[in-house]
Length: 179
Ligand SMILES: Cc1cc2nc3c(=O)[nH]c(=O)nc-3n(C[C@H](O)[C@H](O)[C@H](O)COP(=O)(O)OP(=O)(O)OC[C@H]3O[C@@H](n4cnc5c(N)ncnc54)[C@H](O)[C@@H]3O)c2cc1C
Image 1 (cartoon, rainbow, N blue to C red):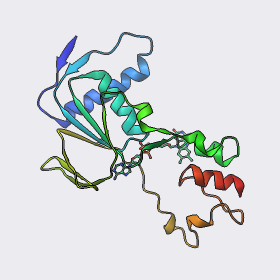
Image 2: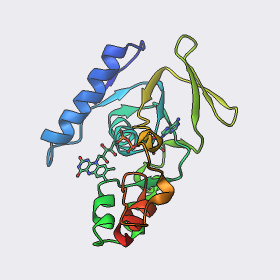
Image 3: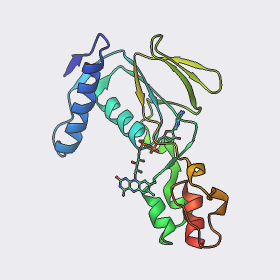
Image 4: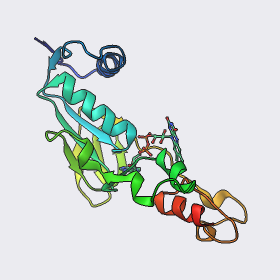
């Protein structure tokens, strides 16, 4: 059975995404969720834990939507695994997979960085020059780590003289274990 999902409204969209999330938590073992018919053009910036998870939820719930993900990194990092790498329990590659491994085939993945958002025109410019338009935009670009803000520290110190820092990626987590 399908509903229709017509005029773009933020409230309607959030209700749909949250409803899908609630199904995921409460609906294990139950029938597939009802699909909503739509021709919405949905753009997700960031294909990390949040962006990839939401793309999967929306594909499950929407019938006819165009979903595009943008991420400059081709690899997906399972960040909680960094702790196990830094503790010497797993190798650096343990946390690394291909983003495409986690996406349904009908989602489009663009490997580029989002450089500018124009919310009035509903357009996003990518670092490589391409401009993407959208009906709905999800910004899931995570955190920007600012290691330079730590006085006296730089990432090239990691792995020497007992200095460790595991947040910057799997290779730094592995160097932390070496240290
Ligand atoms: C060491 C460590 C241990 C952790 N342990 C746990 C745990 O035990 N349990 C738990 O729940 N959580 C844990 N976390 C936290 C969890 O990993 C994060 O909360 C989660 O990854 C956040 O997801 P996200 O999608 O918001 O960001 P991310 O997963 O960081 O994804 C953001 C994505 O956006 C992309 N991006 C950034 N800028 C742009 C741009 N301009 N254009 C396009 N793409 C862009 C990035 O390349 C990235 O792929 C841990 C994190 C770390 C670092």
